[in-house]
Image (cartoon, rainbow, N blue to C red; front, top):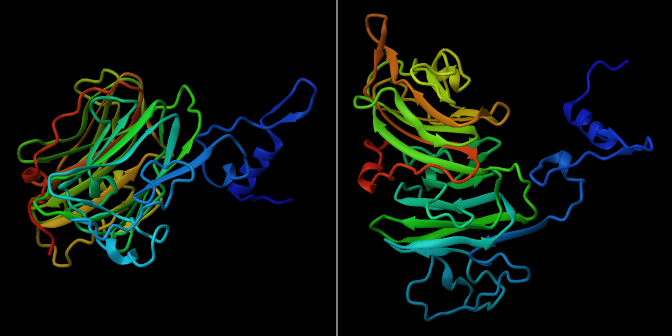
Length: 389
């Protein structure tokens, strides 16, 4: 008798056998949500229709891709815009966007219902470039994050990420696989707050036109930054109202003091918690599923630390840390607050509060409307305090 079955084999067997028996005794197929994805869902046919938005098809409409006509007189073209002048329509005429200093480009502006399944983007890895996502014609965005940080790239410094929700490939190809359902409308904008023009913004947003179940929530993401000599514990997220699931944390942590920095506990205050949280971690490297420090970079399906620390151990050190709660979402009913302590080891062998610089992205799903976000800090307060060498 076989004592071991591959999980994919078992899941496929369950899928094929069905989850229930009909009244006549015949097996029936289980209901598959349109949010389902992955290998097990691939054989299941549905009414979903795949669409994709890029500079070559700004609306994502059927039969509307690659229609741009070369325009040699264009005053400020995107990079490589003239490369197809001799080839004509249909030959990579408009693969990129140009977003000049101070401008906002609308990347997606479509009616629903649907589900965004994948976003690929290449830009300059600058916190001056802001992504904003608006669901169902809301006035304030549900996602407001500097573009690189949204894809788990901290300190404006490239590092590979190989996870389920986010993949970052050389040289700065950023990919997001968080599912993003919307019912009435979806709008995504890209704002360039830098003083220089962005001559090449490459992107593709793949989504499905499909019904969205009543219990599907909306993805939210929020960026924050603080110096821990002013705010400690550091606040990753606060003021969330409504029912939801917390699904991810990204930290871009600048360590200014010598020694080990990662003793701080992460805490989740939920559903009326006041002084003490319901969930309390045991240390920073513990939360990011490591142990005895971060001896080397690692990037896995759910957790990673992607930037190497300096060999000589002299500060500043730059850490990019992600933790996706995909298998273990933090579920709450009415409110949520998330904090982490900046805590290290002192020379006396005791814990020591640290004066570091932390920027973060919190990811969560919830029903709308969402509580107002704190104002996004101005550009001067978003640029890394000390650039990595």
